[in-house]
Image (cartoon, rainbow, N blue to C red; front, side, top):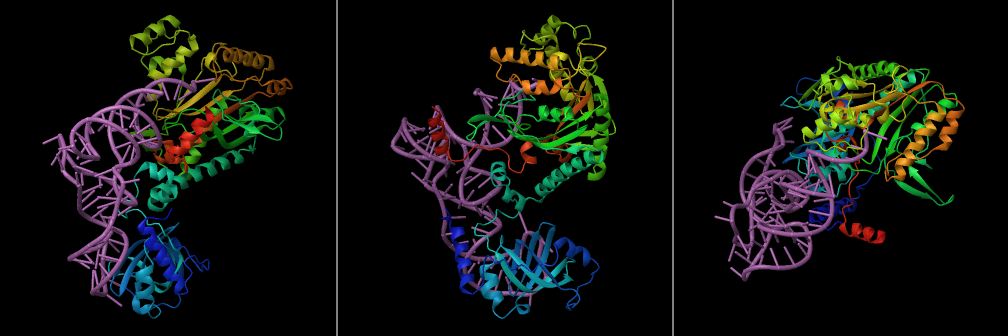
Length: 506
RNA sequence: GUCCUGUUAGCUCAGCUGGUAGAGCACGUCACUUUUAAUGAUGUGGCCGAUGGUUCGAAUCCAUCACAGGACACCA
């Protein structure tokens, strides 16, 4: 495993350290400040100081990122989580022989060290630490990638994320932002009185969305379980139970394709709010974004790739209206199945002629409108045919009380007033079962336990899901979901393993 | 699932219409006590993603496979 000659060299250096009585994996860390604090506290030191200030003595630690050995003195840059610090390491300030036999020969870039010393400013004006004692905490036996270009190969960055994090500080920032987004989201809903809950990740029936699930087996009960594709049906059971505002931030799993916006496991927040409608959700969503932008200190004119997204410009438009106003679809065709099919064919697009009107309207939307929705836009009044879990409008039974929020041409949230009529829900499940019998392997399973729950009465409720990964992509100006997931799904590297697995399946 | 592109030293990359492999950084040795991708000298370093084929000869051409990136399809 460690046959590489650079690694062998470094292993030998670790052995030399051991022979000199130095533990290359010591845990005797005496660090008493972080680099960020060190730099802040000592920012008042302006001129070059040669004299040691007995009141300012620090112990800092970090990984060596740069090493410039210049004869009897060296400059070392070490990095901890908070920042980068330059050390000045001179032979005559260290114990006899240490500089030449230990430091110069056996400590190198990548190693984690601890340094004792005092602050001073170099001739070039950089606040640094003048070292009077130095020891190795952890020997790195694998060399780091090249210091200037770092590591750019995306495959290596994803497979060895730790290397990516060591080499690319902006990647660390992305994941710090992700953590902040999740933390702020939690706080926002808690402050509104929502209760955070945890519902099962292993479901007897994969429900709450139409997607292919991952299957596993529970030995003790000898039953198959499905990794959840959505928490929806469990959260609604909690509303039936009397909780009036609940949310869950957690992973969903879908056994489908992967691309720049899809990973087999992804994070969403779903929240359900009794005695509210989708209109209330529009308002809380605007408030939520305002809250995020304030606390993340983001500009409301947010750059995203070549785009500028104006978060002061929330729009709201019914789906049918968006087709003509934004999509440029002729107004006289949007309510006719035949005319839509003809229109799509005219545009050289594949058309499934078995689709119903609502599905075709959805097609028109996907084709001509979605990518044009740059500023945040609530698309409302979805056709009932493509909204099986949403409550019908009281004034127009063809449409539902639903919206999806689009930003930068991408769906960010999906929300609706919930269907709470148990008989209607039972009929819709039956319809899904029929579709399944006809070969639709993504049709919803019958969940009679859920229908029974509804039969006890679920208060009028509005619910919403927000894709956290896509939201973080937007806020961090990243364009692949893999860049906002610490460990994105990857195929195994070892080809032999794949073949063996494939043979076992046959 | 389809198409396109890529895979060469630890890292970042060259390598022309086929003639048995190059640079920078890193690493080794030497010099250097205020550098900023330090500098100067010198040296080591490769199953050219894998397997077949064409050829006197393949990193280079062809086929298949693996992995990745991108686009499309799928995912209401």
